[in-house]
Image 1 (cartoon, rainbow, N blue to C red):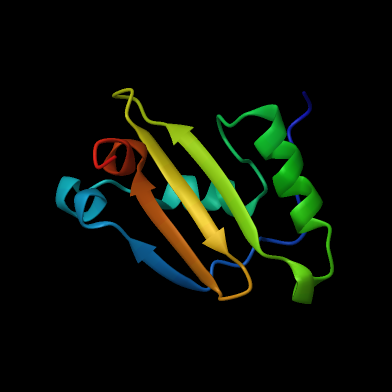
Image 2 (image 1 turned 45 degrees about the horizontal axis):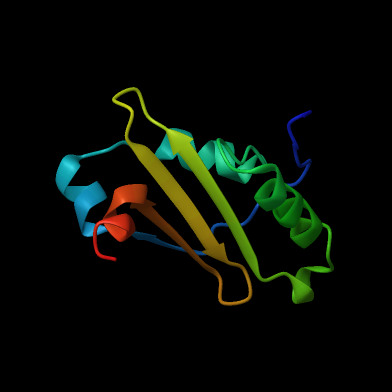
Length: 100
């Protein structure tokens, strides 16, 4: 599948970073830049299609975008945005898996 790239950067709004990501001192900016460029990382085709449909809606109608990137240690970092609220969250995938 051809990667989606946007000509306009995806807005970040207020950036919230999980306590675990902060504690580990992970440099999130390479992943944030990829996200802003429309590189959704390692996500399912269905979620990729959802993101691209969402991004092509009028700005006032956009809601959610999600991305996931594998880091060099195998850990996965996720970026999830609520565009209507102007909030982007960065967290480790296992932060939510282990609490379920």
